[in-house]
Length: 346
Image (cartoon, rainbow, N blue to C red; front, side, top):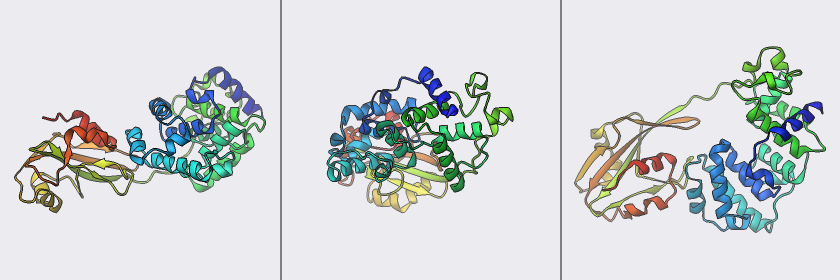
């Protein structure tokens, strides 16, 4: 209990002024939590404001199309979050008559909501004493209590959740959860934490054992997969192009240029000989130019995408029917959006 009270006292004097901290509206809190999954606060802030402006209530969000939501989400990554957000909004409106789930167990039924998000909403909005455990919380608990169990192991996840639950202030779970998360973000940082002024430094196990840098412990990450993308950027004589909608993967339902994925980096001759290229430009004269001299590397969590954008000027065809001036209306991955911002249309 002393642990919790010290955290709350620190929080009240040091917390950041964040917009979602001025409300206990579950829709608003849910929106902020989904946006901030795998996202820094400074990066997610603008997206939060955009979503609140465009979809001020769950009814507005439920009425949106997936394309509208994905376009607004563009650049934030982990697009399954956006698809799950829309799916759950429709579920709340259509199945729950717009009434937001009010308990941890009911919140878990929402698509895209796991233990952490359900705990955050349940405690902040409904004062349910269920502890949050995210990266910041893992770090605080591991260092303070001297836990050397891997935080990304199945056993570690279970043990840390139990420890977090035992440590929570059951009379004030909302404040406790927000305090421990903020403490991990601002004070007990991954690198160079300022232990000298930490209010918990007299009782922190890691500090007493000089093991702050060693905790928390993580199991080795999965090997990063290398992929090789060749995008065909079509520029026809009547200023048309072609984009296609992805059907699977992390960019599902986003749009991209026709893609030739290969097992390694290829040159222009290999590109032209590829069956996808031949099918695209059957009986058409083409001129091919590589847009960037160097291969672009787009790094995602578990894969690195080595990318070439091949600009192909050619004659008109019914197969190329999208006006270049319309392309910015479509939701695309950040990789494509960055290219479009650099590509000057003649």
